[in-house]
Image (cartoon, rainbow, N blue to C red; front, side, top):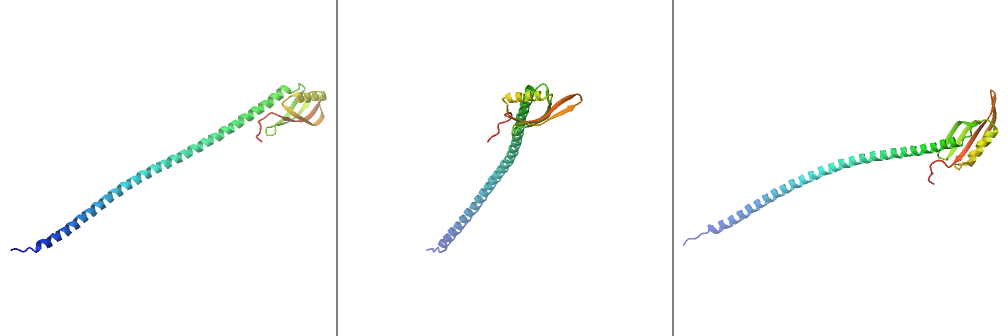
Length: 178
């Protein structure tokens, strides 16, 4: 009869050492898998950071482009205002071209588009020519009111003239928003 005492004790030692070995292998595999996952996650974060910085650069570029567009829009509006004012001045000159008496001439002229008024100074060959000029302006539908001021008689060599100043209120010019 043979007694084997060592086989049970050795069997238990082997199973504990096997368990520790498997546990350490599992932990090592878990750490390796965790490391690989972290490396992949880091690469994804870096790619996303690159995409975000490109997007930010595009956004800055879009903002610069938007600013340029706004600058051009302001310039176009300014040109529009200038063209509108130009047409107003042309209307005023057309008014004077069509409504000036042949014996009246104007030496000073001022047009105020904001309040649609015209101030002129000039000379007429006579009081009668000045009166006829006032009637011509009065009959013109573009002129709302006339104010005559500074009427005086001037004598030049060999002829007499009437100096005068006129203020005209017109409906020429842009309609101002109220």
